[in-house]
Structure formats: structure tokens, C-alpha cells
Image (cartoon, rainbow, N blue to C red; front, side):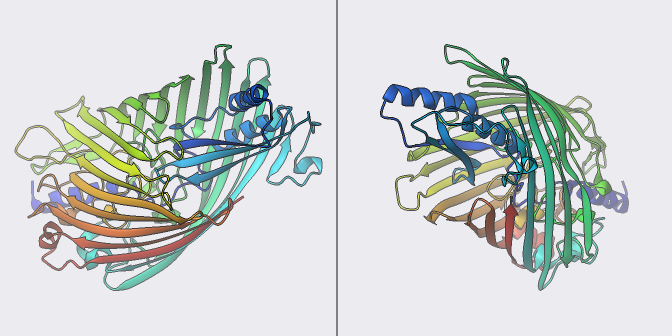
Length: 572
């Protein structure tokens, strides 16, 4: 194939790769986040130990939230309301904070009353009460609103290693992008939503729920792809669901949940499915990443005690300019108590997609027909327990339409110093995503699908991920988490990245052939300030050094890349 045509094909592939735009912070409502720990704090405990135990069991039955499951804040609100309705509960309130182990922690604080309290039949703004954001609630229903906004300042020095001319050549998203020297921009978003849940049958514990939110986002200044100011508004999530719970005298519990619509979805730690929506381009807010809901998610989940089974159909919300029309269908199973052992298996297929793979010989292959098999195992530490934790996953991809054999996996080991000042933790992770060996008949480059999240999940390097996403790479990553003060957390990282194969067609065209396998290294630190349940502040500095492979591919003109950002988020 002529060189010019081959280059155009590679550039087109690169434009499709930009659909997983570089997430750094998750949803303001924490929807879709994985729960690491669930804490129950009982205040004003009863002297009668048996009566106290009965209250604790009643609270946990009314609040069926488990570690290693995905949170939906509407259900958190509804379950907390159920706890408040218990006769000897004076007050109940939950708090959500990011966990140093990854994911989030949920703390439910319950104040026990010595006497049976008088129940309010109805409450909320619509009844004349000052309960905003709750509009209405009674013994069977809850109607609430959510409001959030965020704003970010971001600056780069020598973005794209100071070679934006080469790194973004032919990219359809690029219009006078950031590059040599210092550049900066401002971006933000505002969101409002309405959510409700009602009891269909008190006897059978069945519920109908749903909600929708609208987001307006925008950017001003010279950001990574463009200097064009823009504002964009659209619905984010919009879903309806049906769920129920069954409790047995033996203590066993069965729950089921059917939902459909625009929703966020995550499997496991987000290694394969996390970024179900794209940001940037005409939507703005490239780094704040406010949109997470897929165009469509149909999800059926059943849980019996520690066993979870899920069937899903997913259509990610991609940018219009590079929409690959990908459709994913899958089955996911998980078992474990969320602490000592957690094992999971996923099988998924792609019956529809226009996303293409390219080879050095000029062959054009496609994602349609992709099948993926995933096995994962990890442990976690129970709340406030120090010691060893580890996790790992392995995944294999094949395609029903041509010879494909791609492999990816990671192993992570760490230690929690939960009893030490600052409750620090330290972890090391090795991750591998296969590349394509041009000397074989089999296509081997890993398709990252919807991998992503934030810098502590599967965005590998605040700067480097923008150059090399999760394919044809192996990574050594060291990370610490420490809270020197209860509301401030520091997260330093050191990351060292190497290509698996010199052939890198399918990645950034400027790096389509790597003379050496060293991509580079990055050193960064994140500072988080949890001012209150409504206010959150976040700062980040990253310094990325191009490796010999990148430097030689760019004619030894690549410069180190420095970026810094500061943002706040407010949620009501």
C-alpha cells in the first residue's frame, strides 16, 4: 500500500482512539463508583446488648449496601430514608468519601433513640418543610433533586513534548492545540437532576425508580486539542429501574435490579469497562470529564448473599466526530465478601462496531466480532485493619472474523498502615497490554475498549495517557496514599512505561514505529481537600520525561512535559 494512503489510515485510527478522552475526576454524584468499605457508626447504643444487636441487624437489612458493588446515590438516599423510619432510630445520615484503597467509602451514622419516636408521615420542600434537596418523601416514596458544578484551571509547558505538530498531525480534533511553551485554559460544568423512587409493594419489597440530569459544560483558552471556546448542553443520565429484595429467616438475602436508559457502568476495578462516555471536542470540559453515562445501558443484576450475576447491553456515548457505533453485550459474575476474597469473571462480545484495526501490511480489520474473556481476583483490607492487600486480572481477546489473540493483565500488591499516623498505604502495580508482532499472521494488539477512570484507576499517567493509551505497553507504577490531616490526602506516583513491540501502528501516528521500546517516565502528585460533604478541592502536578523510544521517533526534539491543574467541585 502506498505510504501516503497507509498514513491516512493510521491517522484515522488515531482519531478513533481519542474517543476515550482522558478522565481525571469522576461524577459529582459518585454514581458508578465502586464501594470499597461500608462503615456503620451507632451512637447512643442501648444497654441491652440483645436489643442493640436487633437494631443493628434491622439497620443493615434496611440498608443493603455491600463492599465491591457499584453505588447509585438515589438508592443510598432511599435506603437511608428506610433506616430513618425504623422505630428506634432518631437520626440517620450517610457520608461518601474516596477511599485510600481506591473506590469510595460509605459511612452510615445512626443515632439510636431510647424510646419509640413519632414518625412524620410526609416531609420535603413540596410539603412546606425546609428539606432541600428533598422535594417530597413519605413512608413509600422519595423525590429528590441533585445539583453540582465544577471549575478547573489547567496549564501545560511543552504539551505533547513540545511536538504538537507531529503528535497531532491529521487529528480531526486538533485546531491550534497546546504545544511549545506555557499554555492554559479554564473549563467548567454545571448539572441539575431529578430522581425518584417509590414502593410498589411493601410486602414484597419491590420498588420503581428513575431519574434524569442535564449538564452544561464549556472550555475557554488553549487546551490540548484546540483554542476554540465552546459551550455544550445535553442530558447525561436518564434511566428507569425496577428492583426488589427478599430476606429469609436464616439471614440469607436475595436482591434483583433491572434498569435501562442512559446510565454509567463499571465492571470490577474499571480495567476493561469504566469510561462509558466521552468528553472534549464540542462538549468541552476535556479534563473535568463530567459525562459518564452511556447512550444506552440495559442491565439485569441478581445477588444472593455474596454472589452477583449481571447481564448487560452497552452502547457508549462517543463523540459525534469519531462515533464508532460500538455495541457491547456481556455477562459478569462476582463472588466474595468484599474483603478477604473477591473473584470475578466476565464474558463480552461486540456484535456491532465500525472501529477498525490496521496492520503494517495495510490490512484493515475491525472490532466487530470481538470476544473478551476476563478473570479477576483481589483482596481488600477490612476497615481500619493494617496489612497486605493484592489484586490482579487477566483478559484475553479474540475475534470471530479473523485471527486475533490479544492479552492484557495486571498484578498489584500493597500494604496498608491503617494504625499509623496519616493511615498511609503503599502499592506497586505491573500492567501489561499486548502489542502486534508484524511477523505473525495473528493480530495481537490489545483493544482497550472502555478502560479508563482517573489517575488512580486506569488512566496511566496524567500526561502520558494522552500519548499512549492502554495498548502495546507494559507499566511499572508505584503509588502512595497518605492523609496527614483528616480532610487532606496526598497521592504521589512514579510511573515507568515501555512498549511491548516496536510496531505501534494503531497508536499515535508519530510513534507508529518505535526505534526503542522506552516510552518514558512520569512523576506526579495529587492533593485532595475534602472540605465538607458539599465542597471538594483537587490539585495535581505531573512531570513527564520522554523515553529514548519517543525521543528518537520524534527526531530527538522531544522535551519534558509539565502540567498542573486545580479544580473545585460543589454538590448539593
